[in-house]
Image (cartoon, rainbow, N blue to C red):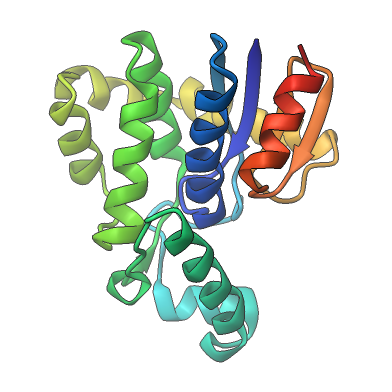
Length: 205
């Protein structure tokens, strides 16, 4: 069983969706390969990111306009015992480097743990996951050497790869994440309930 998931690391719904997928996988008790596919919610984001306030104004017109969507996301996250602290976020990052970190972690079969730590850093601790030093700390926590990560972060080929994967997703018609592809058979968009994910897993066997 293979599940491909298009995600972005600043997507709270992706955090919720992956948590629910893990719960669904426990219910079917079948071996499953999870592949995280990079998607850039803000493909034109400056490398240094934007202040949170500037981002909310640029994206939604104002922080007040964004509030209902974020409030809904926080409530859904609580249902999965994920307690977001969005008020701690002062900067919305460019996520290309965090996707590169996940790709490097895959070499060591650590992508699941690294991704969850990235999500925890951003949504719960309010840490800037576009900052190289913060990403190096995450890597080090899982035994990935800083020298290797710095080399991979500097690689223009790696950055191009992430952007190309984002383009592939868009050509497939994906305009929001999470987006699941189960065994190249069943497609599902959004942070679906656990039962819907179980059904998709069963149908794609």
